[in-house]
Length: 127
Picture 1 (cartoon, rainbow, N blue to C red):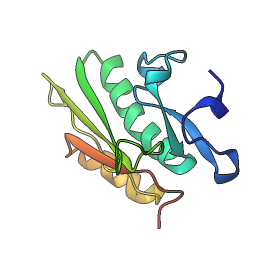
Picture 2 (cartoon, rainbow, N blue to C red):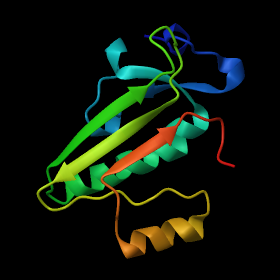
Picture 3 (cartoon, rainbow, N blue to C red):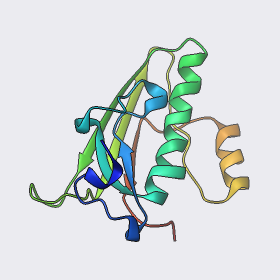
């Protein structure tokens, strides 16, 4: 599947063909049901920020149950409004909040995760 085959995809708008379940977490790079059209910023760095946290927990022996729910304005929309990630584990996995400020991201990591659910808006960039 090519990026320009994803519903709603437009390279001029800096769209990405984003995974619902990221490839680094075992998500398919072939199954079109695993792809949504996202803005570049929502896909990376924001979605990637969350996926890397899950990957790190799994690498340290945790079993994380992850659910990703895309949200659309209507059934006919091809570009999502955003998506929600929910994660739970026996070891108490929690997401660290994303911030565009690297110092704030480090502080969030240091204090430990506080969120079981994160909603990522599909926007071109963080304001």
